[in-house]
Image (cartoon, rainbow, N blue to C red; front, side, top):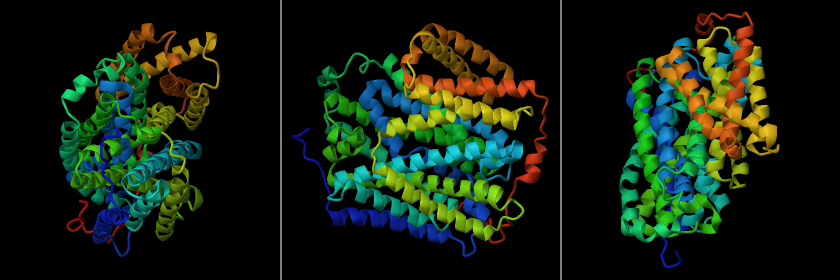
Length: 556
């Protein structure tokens, strides 16, 4: 690696590239801004976004710089199958959103957040649990994207990591602050087109510049037997299986996804998410193969930080003009998700904190809501900048957040289908699942003897829950029960006595199983029922968007 000249830019070049990108997106956001922005438009852009914008926005939100870096990290860590496990399962989970999304939208066609619906469905504690988990998740996501930006700028220029973080954070806040979600979705369209084009050029150029395909023959000795196997059990147990569970939780519990679900035209939910599935898979798997290439070449990540792999490969093997294209691609990827996180956080505080729990729905002032939303964006940016300085491992962050949300998946889904789920069942099941998840995930208790056996059994049940939920969305309850039982039976010989050794996987699975068992048992034992029509009556827009012209609004 020391023999390879790396491309770096001067301070002026980096500032110019950032000015072009963020200046352009800011100009674009001003073109769609409204003199009197409505609170509902700021959160969901009027609930009627068309196919092209919504599909691009969903793709761009799911494809973030962190997912590119994490996919490459997976390839570097686990070898050939790493990017497949990361990209394929992530793409598949986008697909699994739409059947649940159609039901959620049918129950609450004019909602802004999932937690807002849970307030009507259950009560305050359920709402705040979901809203609180989303605040934590979006802040971690925002932080990881700022980390990606800081790493990129520090590797390519004389600027330090912290200076890079401030530049990226300031740029994203600049164009998102005024128009909120409306700015996020429109700029996503431009960003995803640019990203797809850049990946199609950059990845092949790096491969051939690095000596492909000869590098895969001469460098085979750098891989372990597991890294060299496309069917690596290590890759599946440590990366694939945890990610299957994690991204399903992302799909159901993530407000950035829910916000797009409530914004897209209801009849366009299915094509939107199918298109995003294909776009995400192609791009992320392609970028992830750079990590596999680095593994074959025997490249050591700069400073020992695997977050550096992708920019390190780009600066080592691309000519200057393509490094500039790569720079814009990564900045676009991280910005498209960071602006989604800011929009999600603002909508949560606007609708769930102020709109429901401070002013009350009847007393909520739309102008005050806008001030609250914009203030939230500023505060969230400051918090994410502060935590980004820790430079935590992005892949670990993503899997942790997904596993954390696993505690919410069954209670949330059941709340939209089953009239017997109660506020008490929801709250107790989620808290109990978190109480079990944390010590298992961080190995705070010894995993031997009875404890290990209990974790294995709960994990096997968790496998059944995940499989059952996936099938339920498409085929209904009876096939889901069959799939759950079959999955648990098939997993038992492999998992019993072994799965507790994989903390990430077992932690995620026990979160699923514990929340499901308790939520089901408490709900079935009670006699409560719920009329889902109540949600439509009590969840809706805060004001009429009189300024919105359907023929002129560019997000429609």
